[in-house]
Image (cartoon, rainbow, N blue to C red; front, side):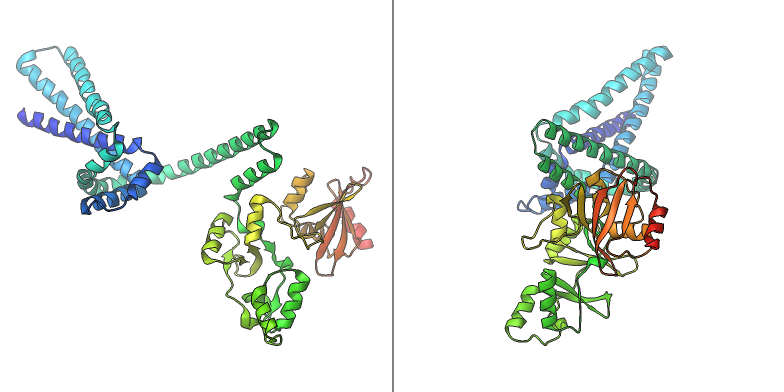
Length: 447
């Protein structure tokens, strides 16, 4: 019986120890734990080792929690079995209680002992100084962790396999709930006059920024202004003046073969030196390439680290899908950044011309048109106004061609035979709004 008593005492000590570790750890926030794990190592090698081990636990939080929980449950089960065994042995020797009373007494005593060692003592030990308590116990716990974690790891991975789909659904549902809650707070703030409408839009843009991909903000391939590698400095200067761009991609033979980017400040240096006949490729800087599926938030961080202002966007086949600049990314948060010297209609700009008509660039995204007019154009296969019109008409339209769709009239006001540059949008007359897409195609073809 002495053996059982000693073993019970050991399990109770381990239970108190593991529960104290768990209590101290859970009382600290994620931020506090990471700050504690990043402490300087100025107090000697022992503290340095503890800090490194704590950093390992923080980085592997789920495995740490699973290992501690498994150890605690093992102790609880072992203590319960040992106390029950001791109760029966003692009862047979001296107490001589009936089975029902013995079972009740054993249950009450076991519950009190486990509650004391599992909840009360660990809380008392860690409540005043969880940081110092955790650091003090880490050296002993490291031995337990090194021995115990490999044993529970297979079970941990098996449970994670079944748990992952459920967690993904829960995370998605939580993110959607958070987005709805933020939107409700923004709406309430605007209604109560706490925040201005523009401020609300900026807050909403910041919230959506995390999920925005590069293909949603880039300048599409058809709108890229680029120059051939064999062109001269003079040609590049003229193109920059005409396009009003300060950075232009350089390609060889076709746009998919981008060889670099020229910057206006580099070009001006050579121009001032009278080297206007040199090939433009001589001053091209290395181009920065990114996939169109990359998150804009990640790209912004990468571009800041690489100190680049423009990146070429590639599609899944390695072709050029578009380009994106720091300005494009920032506009997702603060809205359109207008250049003072630009007077023509720019992509994604909607300009009212009077009598309910609006001018837009052919590159304007359909989603922005739908948002502006609060309408559904059902153009899932196309992203721009030009793409929608070309698909509905079945050909590249000439200036003056019209399309009536979903209660709106689209008139091409600028085109060059290769692309639609500008479109006038106005609500269709009631008599015309019933015309379907096929009638528009037929009318355009007959004309």
